[in-house]
Length: 423
Image (cartoon, rainbow, N blue to C red):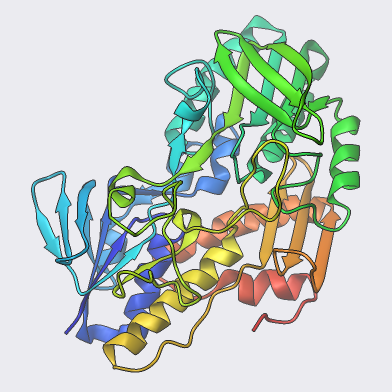
């Protein structure tokens, strides 16, 4: 009997646990360890930040749902991974041993990379439900004031740009619905070299479509933005040219700001020798297995993927839902192969698929593979994407409560877009 430990219970960790149970059957132990005792559906946080959702609608307690599938759960932070001896030291004082470890912690939100940013300082984030609620509190105060300046953007080394675009347009939509959009200025600041780059070198006509969407909503932008620091009510930004030279210096005033941070590896994972790259992301091979520790697998935002291309201001490559889903599936199947003494054969994909909400419409894009040249480069805008994202939220939360390992992207999005299943 093997003991498989899943470290993390987010949009990668929970499906991983369910897939492990479905793949391994009842003859092996599975334990999920997570710092918080609740699951949160992170893609809905921008809606929480403007009051379109609340905490209760996108979170639920983890333990009772895992228990239905005979999966153990420990709500505690992992303070140390002893990879040589297959042990985890937890903040609650417990020690957990494992035969196989799957690291799906997600990233550390590296606000310290830009001085003065983060919910504990002068800017907000929508990377967690706690952060989204903090924005909502200040947003309500600004609305009560009746006018103001709102800045939205992504910091240098950011790798997940979609939520920044989503949030800027969701705020715009919310203000228009309240018929007070004319009282507020919106400013977009991004480390991307151009609008619609998305950390992917663009997808289809993402540049033209997103620029048009931003102009239609009267949201001016600064690209190649090297945000240096934030103070109370002010960003200090260097706008670079294509050679990486300072083209223009900006001081941007705001009443409230949301800036997506760069990502870094979680401290506990970073501390393991030979596990991570210099930015703390877990190194894995094509089978999601770490080359140094053959019983450690990893998937999701916490793994090392090189940027698609060099940019004047550093940007990272996103890890979207479809990628994470396939990585998790590959890790699960390869763990099963390991247990049975068979060769690993399952691989994930670096192809990208995403549904981005834009308030009352949305944008969907597909990049196969993620790094150009591509077999498929597809980008479309329409109200159907907004509706699809709402449906996805409902579906995924229900799936996590039900304990299903059914792959959403394989069965739904690909079919919806008229694409064949990826091999």
